[in-house]
Amino acid sequence: ATGNLVVIVGPMYSGKTSELISFIEIYTLGKKKIKVFKPLLDNRYNETSIVSHSNTSVKAIPINNSAEILPRLDGDEKAIFIDEIQFLDETLREVVVEMINSGKDVYCAGLDLSYKNNPFKVTSLLMSHADTVIKKKAVCHECGEYRGTMTYKTVENGGEIDVGGFEKYIAVCRDCYLELNKNK
Ligand code: ADP
Ligand code: TMP
Ligand code: MG
Ligand code: ZN
Image (cartoon, rainbow, N blue to C red; front, side):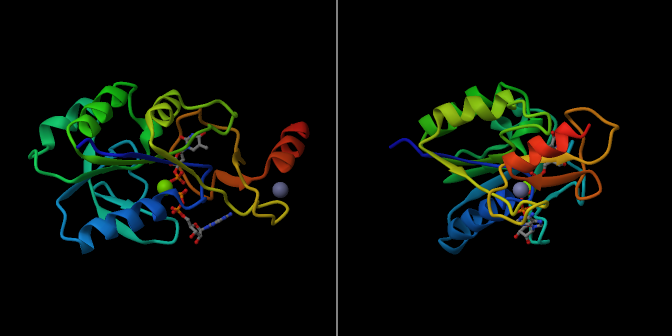
């Protein structure tokens, strides 16, 4: 049988990495063989782990591009996990489709939107192929409501690809996002 594709999206701090780690735990508890990947670009905390904002972590294989995934597989993995997909190239789509067609479950997590409100194309492509899309929300940093679907950048420097955390980015609801950008 073919596998399932689950794509976890949402703004920063919405619990994407935590959710990915929860799924990893389910396979690990069931003694299923898995592999975990992350783009090397995201070297925030650690080059060989995925780390959540609440500091849970899991070992991961760092990759520079999606072509490095298939050669790293032994073939008998039951599931593949990939965090921070927004930093990978669009070929990830073909790689993921090949893996689900060959019977592996694939779990991907990443940003759907940049702080400029532009979709990350690779995330959009994977959402199209997904069996399940899990859209997470954060608590809005401005109004405190559990409606945070966007990320606001609090510093001027850097572009749409700019690794960082709370020193640069906050999660906000759409109303607060519009309000903050109005004052620019
Ligand atoms: P993501 O990968 O989506 O950035 P993480 O799983 O790394 O999310 O982090 C989620 C954790 O971040 C939460 O469990 C909580 O402890 C913390 N956190 C910090 N700020 C917020 C916020 N504004 N809304 C929700 N959780 C937050
Ligand atoms: P997170 O979703 O796990 O919190 O991580 C998101 C990463 O993406 C973090 O390193 C900051 C980075 N980022 C960008 O590069 N561009 C953006 O527009 C946003 C919102 C985040
Ligand atoms: Mg994360
Ligand atoms: Zn708000």
